[in-house]
Length: 135
Length: 381
Image (cartoon, rainbow over all chains, first blue to last red; front, top):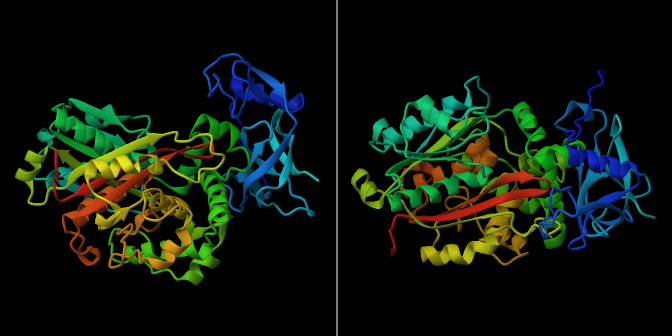
């Protein structure tokens, strides 16, 4: 089987900043002007338009809003990894994050389930959000 | 509006998107009894003409224009382009506007498109398994089912009714009747979505001609009037899941502009990229109370001879989705019905129709929504 590189975020300043923030241990963009946490990463605060944005540590706790099991991926890199569980999580700090929920034998995903964010390495030094069920 | 045109839809083709644009434009102008030199406005919706954009369509077709739109609202573009065109002819900025949407779309092309669909989708969603738009709407579908106790067999009713309508539409790509067993047992794509919950990417084009009411009446005995319309973008972004669409926000204005209510509508064309969105549009446009979808589907026959004809040509789920043309399929079908040219699938005494649009999927939802009411009666100015 040929190894096909998975699709990565484009190497933009914002995507790189997120990757670095996750590598350092779970951080999210925060607006100092209106005290909002922000995701997906922005250039300006979507609440108040301020540019005073910085990366702040977060608890990683969240609640599953929905989940969907990918049986057919559109990219060959995931061919032998399906089924994959994509999920949307509302973090305790407020924002809605899309990520993959780690497969476990002990937990069946359910709406409202408590989960914990983890940094998932998906390429050469590239990190994205992943989730695991919270015990 | 005075005429509509649709190319022959094909599952796959070597013909580029520009071919389908040219074919649709030629058909619709000729059908209107007009000529190339009469066209002074153009609205184009197409992904796959890139790197061409709307001005290049004018260039390719050799037309000189004083009004031009490149439509960037995905499946909401069909409706929005007509609302904009209507304003243009009302104000005198243009006299004859062709609104065209076309694409040559395959599964591979859809995948390529999604990789670069938007910045947040490319960078923060697609890398998580490349589920594409199917994954976005699987998330919405699952939460919608959970909130409102709508079951797979309920969505099945909608899909099967649309397919029944499609059996009467020679240009629909999927014309085999579908049974509930087939619908429920089809292979999972992104759970809970199965094969028949997902559109078939294909090749095709759709167009209409918009002109002044006076000119329309000179050109046809069956003018179709735009009685009202609305658009909305990035509605309620703080909702964690898109369970209510923008149609809920503008429906009062829409019906008020048109002096038409849900009871007056003879047919409804909703943007059916997925069953959940088709149902959500009917809900948010006021056909049933929020959360009552299961009962609505049990109590209504959505076929062309039923209590509320919906997607009378089969919708995208049966006709196929030719990329950006998906948002104009319903427009063309509504005009066809109101001009009483729908043959075997003609809705009796069709006088008023609603067409809804939705599109521009990014991150976790569609950003754009639209709707308009069409009628064979002009109504008050």
